[in-house]
Image (cartoon, rainbow, N blue to C red; front, side):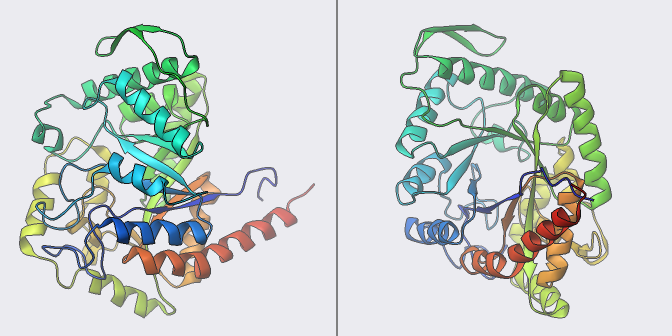
Length: 372
């Protein structure tokens, strides 16, 4: 039975700052990440009723060759917020590259300019060697400690237009001031599956983000997360990040999945192996785990991980099969789904018109069947 008081799930889309196309893992994207193309994607997602857009953070291209064009996260988010009216932006941020006092001003300004449509995805982990690219060499634990102080400092600066002093191990403020603060209420999202990630989420996050795995693995992760929340005396919502490959017939969906990788370049695959090899990120290790034909489950396929950093698993199937898979995660407690498909412009519409109505109808039917 379903708790009829539970809010309806939120469905988000993705901003392809690495580029896009019907084939991935090529040297260059079939559709480069120009402003005009990214604008088309986000405006289409807004028109179709998606709640928010995740815009990731990268220091080099993570879907095509590393030297391929890449749209910088914060600049791009600012530009895209100016050409939309309703849809929110979940902007990924890596603490350690911008002073917290300055970042708090930047985020408050963008939140005001966008009429309160900004949320923040803190990324303490990341791609192997990515921090070192820009001259930052810290351990996994040090990055999570910094992230906690980063969030605390921002919250303190946004609480009132008054000077703030903050004395942490890594973050120090001496009379820093942000005026005005955000006009909305930016929510803090945190991704991860390590004990450090779950502990930080329990202490600071509004939403814990998980990369898709088989349902039994997600159920175990949720159990660990809720236990961490109980120890911290806090609760938080749960989000799931996944790709989708949807077609009218299941065979067509699997053929489409194979076609995505049919032109992948060896140099791109080698770059991705180097990025994931020996990583300390628990979630990354789960995404790249070797499986026959990359089949992680009946409808789960992690072939995308051979050419893409971070989330590399997709749900593959018909609209009904994909909807049923997503419903399974919703029943486990997932409140928000960050979805994507290649190419993002067309798949955004396919998912909105063929998959999401099935999920909403099933949830409504379950709610009506629940005892009053």
